[in-house]
Image (cartoon, rainbow, N blue to C red; front, side):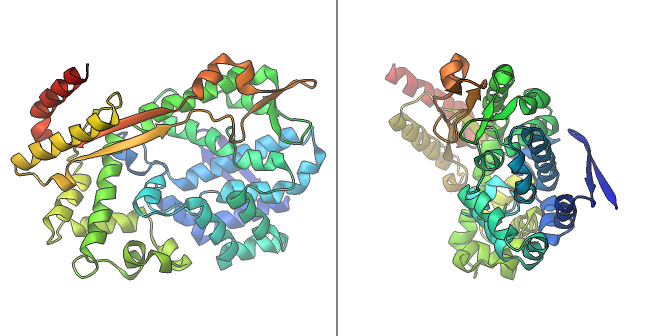
Length: 419
């Protein structure tokens, strides 16, 4: 027997024991090179430029998700003993669920056009190291785990819900972890109460006992606040826009004008030829190195964008969410004209970032309350949750600080005209 303990700032000791085959599998997966790569991918992408403590990695988060999944399963087995048979699938999926993230986490889905769940499933199926470890314990493990992540498929619906639902182990960890690392205070959810309130409904899926209603309401409010204050923070939107413009500009210039290594060339210009080895070869360090090289590009636009990002010489952003769509476009046109008058290249300094926040979606594995007699949709019981269903749209007008005074003046005229 051997044990290994990871000391986590949120969960304290996460101990693994080789006496349990499913935990021995987890230990081997952690030591694999594809999983170690997650140490080099920031959990919150470029948010460290807004919140200086946001340096946690996908590695740290993934360990936390596994830990919560193990706690949840231990609790739920008392309601359905057959869940024991799915330890390998649950633990593997919880640990590996972010294996397919590209550089800077979710930012890469936008700038490179990848889907991290699809890549995760592909790596689980096709990476020799991961596949060998999983199938050493059961020849069907890699198939089961990849289908659980990519297609939300499992013989036990409760297992699916622990991996992907509106109260899954992923969300529980990232809300607490992101709040901790950014220094915000919203993410202090009652994880013990939530886990103890989990139960199994008559249809075999996950449900919440009414005793946990307030803890779950609190969790959903926290999620809303974290999106508004952290994930969609004004400066975070600016950083993501800059990264998007950097990659778009590099792609537009082409391989003859932009230096890259062999794997980055596939990420940029031959996406359909991106293989597993080149996928795994890219991380925050490699992408950051390319951006650092591009700051000396002969292309003034690419160079300026990279210097802005690397030196945190960020653009400004103005909330224009309340304006009708036509006025938003008119506001962008005003910003472009003002920038050009100042001799600033508008294509790499002016834009609009639009986001949609869904705090709770009753039709995407919505939550239910089960007291042993009645099964009710959460939003039917909680007026607070019902109010969270309506999505919130946010729009940010991005512009250079040199035009700020004139732009605000012109936008005020535009707003007064609307009223």
